Image 1: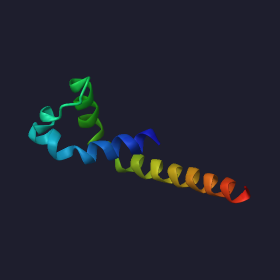
Image 2 (image 1 turned 180 degrees about the vertical axis):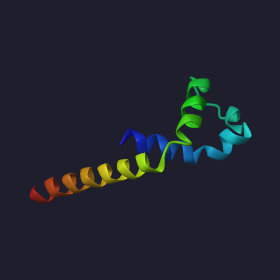
Image 3 (image 1 turned 135 degrees about the horizontal axis):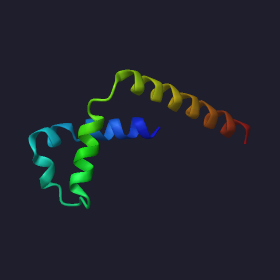
Length: 70
């Protein structure tokens, strides 16, 4: 799930990161660490993303099943 969360975060801030405008965001504590993390995850393999999506689906199904029992 962390893979998907990080990829989604990287996608959300992609334009800001590529243009350098991410420096304008005011609530960043570890700016360089965040930038490196976004840049690294902006190009990880699609296979990993698909596998993470499948794992997320299984987790969602499991939670839905357990909630239905209540």
